[in-house]
Structures are given as structure tokens and as C-alpha cells.
Image (cartoon, rainbow, N blue to C red; front, side):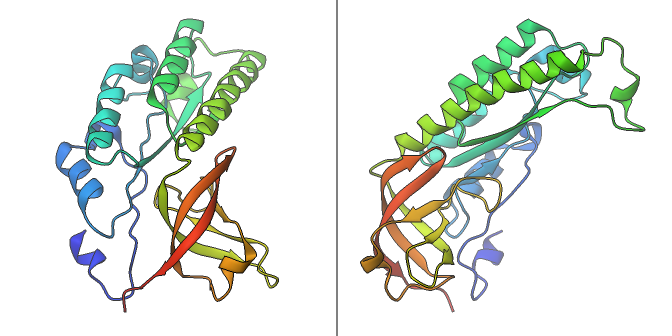
Length: 234
């Protein structure tokens, strides 16, 4: 990974879709401490209830996942952490959903994708018993999605006052719509940073790396004020 970050023209490397059971301390340390590697952990938790995870043929629990998150934040307190979760997996109970909600509340993740279970041809889960009624799945998706929306907005608000390095991705012709991503935000799936003050945006271009201070939060998006354009590797 170090070799990639030392390649000319590459300023930020992002690792995606990590399996929690395979995210060993050495990998956590490498991502969290290597210059040029984004402090970003895309962890595929899927659920937090041990019984549901076992039926999924996965390992983990609320406590083991929170321990992993704690180790990440001990090395990189501002690290971005995202996941996807599935509700309505065959055999899931109300208690399992409550356990998932407990995990999400304590984890304080930056972004969470919430999906309802559906059968897929040829999968082991397709043949499982105890299927959940589709209407119940819809209700559980709505419940967890509402919780996630609240929690991720709170996490974004926690970043107000922080300094972030924003890679500019969008700049309108009138310089009134300038936005990009900080290290803790992956393209397309996470929030973005919207730059304020058109005067301070003069001379910026897509691809610039800009140090900014976070002044506000709008949902999962951050509003930032540019401080300086950083030199890029060549």
C-alpha cells in the first residue's frame, strides 16, 4: 500500500469493502497511519445480532464490532466509518432488530446503507425457513433508516470546527456550486463537502486539494470554508 501512495500524481488512496473478521490490527494500523491513505473504513457488518450473522454464515457481534471501531478511532479519531446492513433476513426477530439499533447507536458511523432482505436465485438463504413477511421487512427498513438518518446527521455535526482536506470534484461556471470529498467521504455513497464563500473559491479547479474548516452540517453533508490550496504530488 505504501508503494501506491508514493506513486507520482496520487495524493489519496482509499480502501473499500473490508470484511470485519479479516480486518486485523496490522491492517487497521496501516490504513490509519500511512500518509496518503484515507482514514476511511468501509466495513461490511451486515447486521449486529449474533444469531442473524450466524444464519448469514458470518462472524461477529455488537461487542466485537464496537471493539474494532474503538481500535480504529484510537489510532485515527476522525476516521470515516461506513457500513451496509440488511434487515428482514430469514429468522430475524424484533430482538435482533433492537440489537442492530443498539449497535448503530453506539457505533456513531458516518454513513450506513440500509437494505431489506430479498431472495436471490441460487443462494443458501433462498432455502431458509422462517421468512419474514414483506410488509414487516418494509417496516423494519423504515425504522432502521430513520434511526440511521438521525445518527449520521449527529456524526456530521460532531465534525463542525474540524479541519479537513477536500478533493474538489465539482465547480460550477459561476463558482457558486463548489463541492468535493474529505478523506472520510467516499464518492457516490457518502456525503460531500460544500464550499462556502464564492470569493474564496476563485482560482480553484476540479482536482485541487484544499484545506478547509467545517462550519456547518446539512444531514450527512458538511459545509466548509476554504483556507488554502495544498500542493499536489507530481
